[in-house]
Image (cartoon, rainbow, N blue to C red; front, side, top):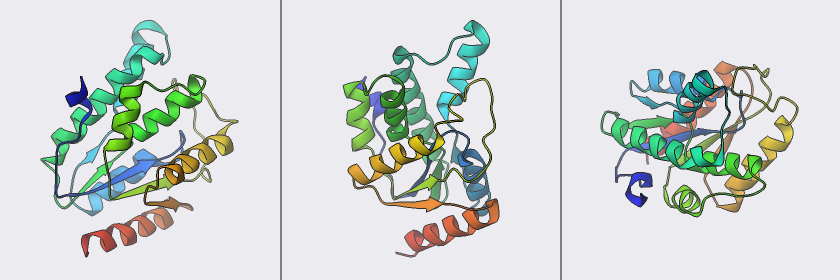
Length: 187
């Protein structure tokens, strides 16, 4: 089990789009991948939970979190091998940890927590809540955006993660992200 949550070593620059639901993470991941002519790692939880909803009309349960984490890391490890100089991740295990704690009264599976803290990235882009919330089958916290943003930010600070807050329209967010990624590449 533990090996299924572990990042494979790589020299590539890895960045994560991180933050509350409906804050533009996937849009930004696609734009950055296109800009850097690389691949991006989709959010495995979306596919997993949408399939669960379509089959059973059920939302995420605690028993789903480890399979989601395993799927996320498996995708990341596979796509790292296909990336150019940058890998753009549309979430990571730290985000899964935050959602676990937010939805399940502060609880996070110890194994998930261990790898959420062990796996590393060069930079997190914390997406701000200044774009309109768009509902779907899985999103359910339109009135808790400020609280969730604060929780995500506090988590990055608590674990001393390198991060930049992305605010503004798509163009502003993209240019900010590119500037910071270029600084990492040029080091």
